[in-house]
Image (cartoon, rainbow, N blue to C red; front, side, top):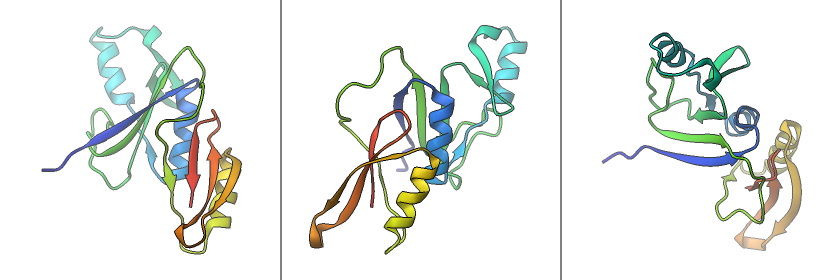
Length: 150
């Protein structure tokens, strides 16, 4: 049995955070323009539920990214595999994440990975060196969500 999944991440600016994570992971930002145009034309959603980001129509307060090799629905643009969905919430992040993403680079390429992530807007929080158990950096995305680069 094949399972599809999505991880839902609360955000303050879903499209901007989706852009960061798509670039960080090599994923694609989903483009729901065709679906939104169908829903608008049929009167199922109003213009207040829609906005534009980077030339695409998106649902206000939501943005998603998907793995580029996974299948997706051609009409909706929604992935049918590994996805991250960002949804805007009114409250800001508080406390440590209970769940985080680890990004693994090429062997021996940790410095390059960290530099690339910083260029995208991530911040280094601390370095962890566990000897033979591993070496990684704790980082934060542009909204302060912790993740690790290893």
